[in-house]
Length: 139
Image 1: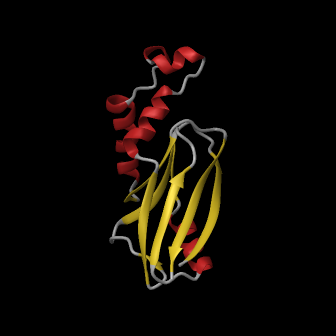
Image 2: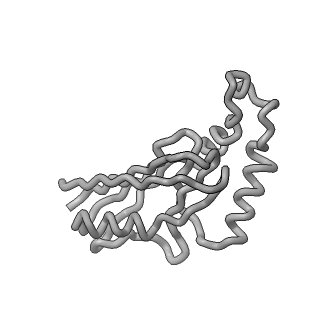
Image 3: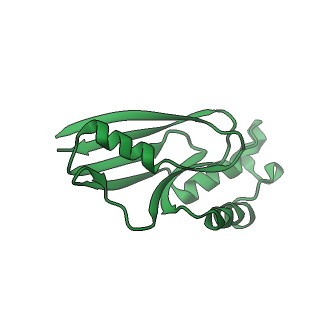
């Protein structure tokens, strides 16, 4: 079995952002020359996520609204974690809810996604340098 590893680096301009990384993942599939296998895409930070969903701006607004108003409001005073001097407990909970990694099948050298599916990096505590690992395995 062959493998290929690549790191994507991000420094976001906002505390929360959703970034479509599908094309960058496919570029690494191409570079790997793997025709049949899997691509693991994983956020290497506990306040970020990687997920698969639709590339539609209204949905992104809905996701951000849902995280802020239902899952984990950005209210530093309401979290025990923030008693340590941090202010990002909400980002940790958002990452836990959305998830930190996805595995995407590779078929005939292409990411085998559904018609509307894309791979996204979700930043929940940004404005500093963070990374994602892409690990491609197969033959």
